[in-house]
Amino acid sequence: MTLQKHADHRADATEIASEEALRLDVSMSTRLLNSMKILEYSGHVSARLPGGETFLVQPQNKSRAEVSPDDLLVCDLDGKVVAGMPGVKPPSEVFLHCEIYRARSDVNAIAHFHHDVTNVFTLVEDVPLLAFKNHAIRWKSGIPVHPDPAHVDDPERGRGIVRTLGPHHAMQIRAHGQIVTAETVRGVFIDSVHLVENAEAAYRACSLGKPKPLTDEEIESFSHSFRRGHHIRKLWSYYTLGAIREGVFPEAWAA
Image 1 (cartoon, rainbow, N blue to C red):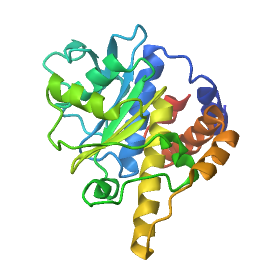
Image 2 (image 1 turned 45 degrees about the vertical axis):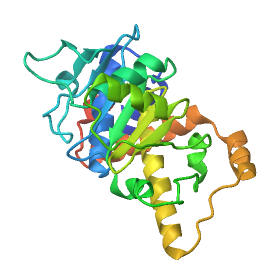
Image 3 (image 1 turned 120 degrees about the vertical axis):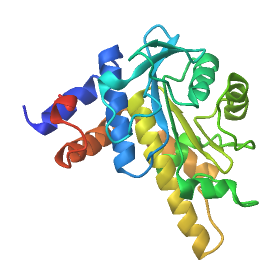
Image 4 (image 1 turned 180 degrees about the vertical axis):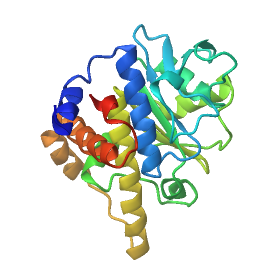
């Protein structure tokens, strides 16, 4: 089977949420985001497991460039490791994953990262991060900013994150980083890429003059023609095939 057929087959199987498939998707997404300088030495991608009360997340001290399916820990919604290598700890901010999954039944995948250009919009007055590019319609309801820059290292801070996130699909933590939520791991990867693309476009626009975000009418127009499932499959294939050619992860992972 060719690389393209491998990727197409995997793309068509995105709704098969077995633990094995989720472990592959989390590992691939983590390495992809790392290779794209979105998720570097810190940050994490998680996936809710079937049943809804546990999730996969990488170990605290594992390099984001090397994480593999077998490395991933299974945690419960209290942040306790219920499966994984003995003595290995989850990320210190595991509680942001716990509390979002507890509060949002529509969320099955979360990415948390620390992208500098995106974060700039939390450091200035009166220049919020809005929708500037067509794929930013995912955040037409807004991208709220959490006022407390502290690490989300206990359940109460996790609940604070949930209050700020509300019903939205992305948020920023002031002077800290970003959180993106989605219905699938592949969806959260694509959304993370688009969030950063949108922020970088907005940053460049601000350097030229007064930024001009999409209007409500333009967002509505894009929304009518947007097919999310098709878009995720198309971009997942594009990015994973490129990553295989560049040696980011083995071809067998996309088989």
